[in-house]
Image (spheres, rainbow, N blue to C red):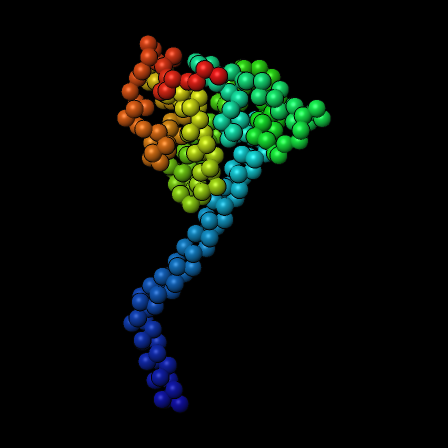
Length: 225
């Protein structure tokens, strides 16, 4: 009996002696699992955010219409203002005309649907602004690390298509220098910064002002179509 009591005392002494270390071990283990759970929750929330952004790009009628037009690189021109080329839509209507031989899926078919949602040039301008603002917001989230570089992969195609459109580039260039002239931040600051980092835009060339004034300047001479 005395041996059992002594054994219990020895165990209690050891526990008391190493209580700090034991507490630390439990704290580390508990902290590890808490961190793991937190990271999983963050990952799930980020995935939900990316999914919501993707649904917005695909589901918003204004953004979807502009992305159709930009994707096929036709139907709009910028000369200080945006103009819709409705002749593209008229040509596309001929696809369904029986007097013309059947053609495979045409690039005009997509542009037609997009252009017919644009009532006038002012509406086109607002929809382009809305689209660029949304993609700039995505770039803002990436810069703030709310979403990761891997999360940007689903948006890279759209971002690249926007960047290669000469009329959109000219608009971004014009609005960038107009904002600079006014001494304010550009509306599409994060989108432009992202393009600089990805080398979609030549930063040195872009920041140099061409033309007579910041509102009528062009990065490139627009095609006369």
